Length: 282
Image 1: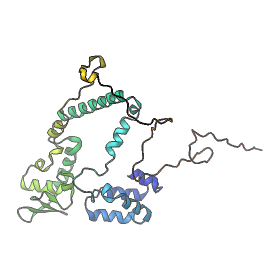
Image 2: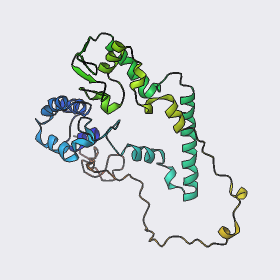
Image 3: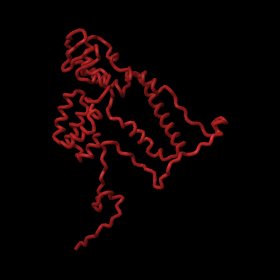
Image 4: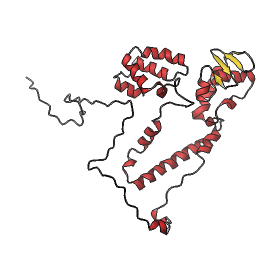
């Protein structure tokens, strides 16, 4: 989203608006989001572009449900990057390469979970929770009643497992206010974290093994399957080359290239074939 906004609105690399956009994107409360978004509204066309894209698609404060992140095209972009050259192979070889990637990915994630010695996975929750433990050690907890506690600028409700900062609800991981309350009540802070952060859940997700496809000579094909005639689909084959470039997602603008050699638009200096006039030097 940041790259699309930078390209579409022609912003510089270190523009202050990009910094406010990142802060607004990572804001958990509506009040904090509005504070940063007011600074973005100084450029009307930029604020209009973000509003048309949908605040719930890039802002944590406005997103629906309990999602760790808000953009929905990351998985498709990742698989496209992995299969960038593989997807030009025939279908059988393409499926074989996809299986090889999955085997490697499952093995790495399974070994990472098996070697984990902490309650939560280090890269997902343990490191973040330990940083909050250090911050919560200096916080004063005020008990309002049996379920409500006031911690600095946060109001914690243990009945609904919520905090006024909204980090606890959205991340399903104890924020620094909840961690301080757990220390005050001598509760296990890990019991407040979602099971999706735990080592056991990650190990269960990648516990199954994926087996490679055996060579064709080793296949045992039943006779009723062998006797079937499978024809290719009735599809029109295009005469030109296959498309290799990715399809831009919604909100992305087209890149206009300008040649530094001849000054024309539509190509760069590497692919430039235009003649350059020579100027006489007297």
